[in-house]
Length: 265
Image (cartoon, rainbow, N blue to C red):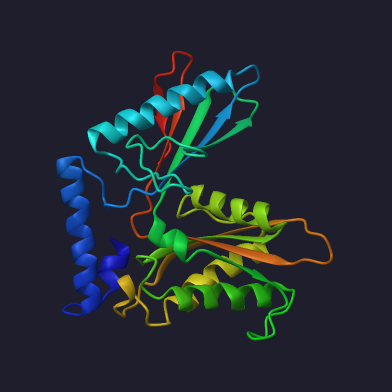
């Protein structure tokens, strides 16, 4: 609502934001997906010691199949070698399920639906980047993140949200960037330097004139969430995970009977 209200009326950006609002209302009313591309299904499961991961993984798969049958998920997962679509959203590596042991008694589950359009404009930089004048420091990080947003234009179905990881190896850096999309939009980074940089990136990108769906306007980003990971001296990766305006995620806390105790978003 805030992003919609800040666009000038009777502009293409305002029109795009109104279409997004209408789409959200219609999806809610008809209990249907916000977008035809329901994306990669990614689960993050936080559980107490002694938890049976394999059994729970089977429950997740059954839930995914049922959601696909009901139309909440598009038949969206295909075999990368053959192109075959089983129609169930089950296959090698899909859904993507990640387990973490924590000290709480409850099971906490977070789900992200990562559409292909926004995933296509997610990217990774290796610093220094001489073409951008980006060195191995936070100013260099700022430059490559803004460059990623500028290059994405409307292709990522903006206004977008960013998850960023500074450092790590190539794989962990990209993974940790995506995990930042689990943070709430109004939270604040516990590291002052990153909190400041998150705010600066959103403010700067919203002055680029890209706007909703790349039609121009004041709302290019709705958030930027950043983290860091140790690296080896030879490498300095910056990974950017771009999320579309739909920002489809949900989270629950389960009680001992596996019924929903709390909604997280």
